[in-house]
Image 1 (spheres, rainbow, N blue to C red):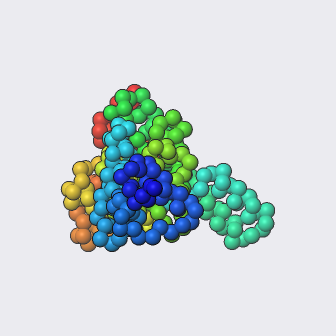
Image 2 (image 1 turned 60 degrees about the horizontal axis):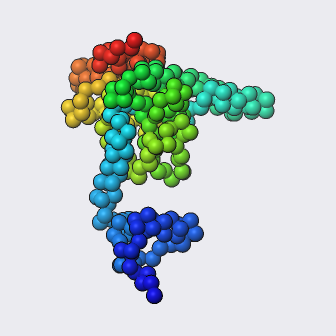
Image 3 (image 1 turned 120 degrees about the vertical axis):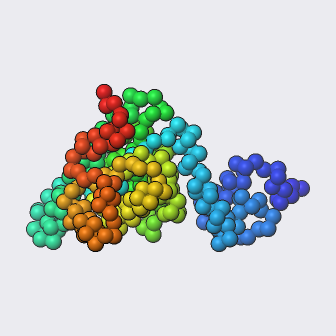
Amino acid sequence: MNDPHKLTEHTLADVWADLQAHTKAGITLQPDAYRLAFADPEFLLRRETRGMRMQLEMLKPDLDQSGLGIENTVVVFGSARFLAPDAAAQILRDALANGDAAGIAVGERHVRNAIYYEQARLFAHLVAGHSARLPRKDRIYICTGGGPGIMEAANRGAHEMGVPTIGLNITLPHEQSANPYVTPSLSFKFHYFALRKMHFMIRAKAMVAFPGGFGTLDELFEIITLVQTQKANALPIILFGVDYWKRLVNFDLLVEEGVISAQDMDLLTFTDDPRQAWETIRAFYQLDIG
């Protein structure tokens, strides 16, 4: 008679296949002292094993990207709520047809912000076009949070140029899926925001922040702080959408009140032009654009 506890006779693939089968069948696994530790979800999800989970979340995307020769990225942040121009225009047309005043206002806002979607896409075209003609070790890849909006636009721009593109997604209360333009082998999912942000910085050679909300601000100011305090190497930090950023943050006030130095403003570049954003990066690294 076969002993069901002789897991040493199973391959690792068998172990994980068993776990998957239980999950698909909606069967909750019960704690089992005899189950291999690495194949024991109850054990891996304990509070005491959090450090192991964090280490694994740090290691997996790093190994996968290194294995594909990806060492340099341009990270693009921005609102997940901005729509592509055609989708925004359709919302406005529908609202106008219905005579819905509130809907018209929303549609007009979508159309206005869709400009940023298109600019993010065009910026990614420039980066990917440069990368496509280089040896793999010298390529610069577009990396985003992997979601919709500006993230989708940047991944889309690189994808349209036939270049692999990276998405670092995050589990959220309302499930967020990777956008369809992320290269499947470079589509990663995170639980910990902190680990995700570390991965943004590990390979980043530049950071471009389009208009966005709390998440964009969180990512932007963490990177500014790391560079300001020399915890990270200097790199171009580009704020795309001059009017938006200067209305949102009174940078001059920060200097006037002495909470940052005037030289700290040199860390930032403001622009409304995708080509100028790329030129800033190109000049910083003295890249030949051919």
